Image (tube, rainbow over all chains, first blue to last red; front, side):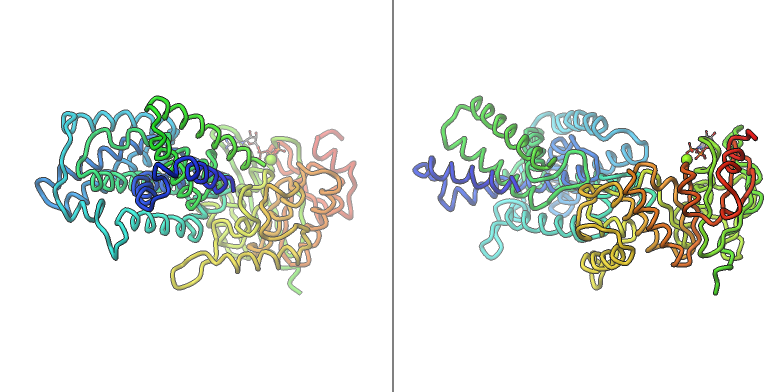
Length: 302
Length: 246
Ligand SMILES: Nc1ncnc2c1ncn2[C@@H]1O[C@H](COP(=O)(O)OP(=O)(O)OP(=O)(O)O)[C@@H](O)[C@H]1O
Ligand SMILES: [Mg+2]
């Protein structure tokens, strides 16, 4: 699959050109994995949504609302309530998208375009644009800088997320129904699959994943702000498409999305180490994503 | 020999959509091991009738008996659970999934203890099934979109045979196929008789109808014009029944 070749090509390129700048150090490589953890979790949700023939554009805004909800709730009520508030906000917004798409039969592109704007606004007004510190050390350990048997918690979250996502996607009835729904909704329906329920669930899963991603951001940065998740939309969609998931549904890969996401992380990291100006970074990244997506789609349509 | 057993019995079926009468006073008995062809011009009500028998529509009035017992179907799933399978004109296959996932679409096999998909068994049972019916495909793991139209229709028919215990409904199963592929699918359908299922087939091709069916039932604008034994009629009679021109 193209994503592995692309991953390898970018890796080798940076390894050669940025060797002296420390690209290959264990610390830098670990850092890439840690930085991509939230995007990888979002990507898992998006694989489900795209595979079912839907899309979620709102996950970036959900990340911000979830992180802020967790941070604010934690200040007054402690760890457990904070975590529940963060995840709950994600699931609830995802479920709202789901109801609008599955039961009111509105197109997910338009619904989530609207909720993207709506919840970006809500995130801004929640704390008047202020950043909320996250002091709870259990929380920052659990979702950020902590370690278990010397494995960073963000790596553990990534592995758990990918593991569960892959298992559900490839090896359960639900996963099969998601693929069938995206592939041919009429065939799925006449085969007794509840297409509406599948659509509701994939968007809810997307919201839940974005909620978890919000907690991971808040844990790593030890603060929550309305800007969290703001710039992830393009990266995550690109990671998922490059990873072999079709935009039109019916086919995809959770493992591919992980590799795609790491590839995007590596790209960001390498461009920074190359000392490019931010504007140049954006241009180069955009061009490389365009190339990667074009190659993946050509490959998928053959 | 149970070949004479009545599988499906429709009596005085009426179906109206608002003011439009799609079917009026339709009655038909189907026996096991028998192929009945349903013919009529466009809009005659053939598909509507199939949808009534497959549980998609509930008739305005009339009775449906299945294996001697009066039944009604809440929806397509309930008809399916009673042993009725439909092969749709537009296939109803998921193109990007493998053959075996389509064979078990909506009825996937799982294994204990976690209820995960049992892909190995689905693959193997699908392979047995296509081999048995002589549907020639590369393998049960092939992706549907890599197959020809005839192979796809073969999969759809194999799926129906696998799940049907009583009755298979075919709505123009060869409408989209070429000559050779049509012949293959016709062969498949003829072989289904040996399985002692009742088969109701809609077709616009009188050649096909005469080749396959035991009886022919003619509809014209929702009205049942008559039923003929295929061996005792000819194309001229059927054509004039369809068109109403003597
Ligand atoms: N859902 C519906 N609502 C209203 N009218 C309908 C509906 N379904 C079918 N009809 C009408 O019932 C009549 C019979 O339609 P049907 O699809 O059964 O015809 P058909 O014999 O299958 O035709 P064809 O050979 O073109 O497939 C037509 O007049 C059609 O317009
Ligand atoms: Mg029809």
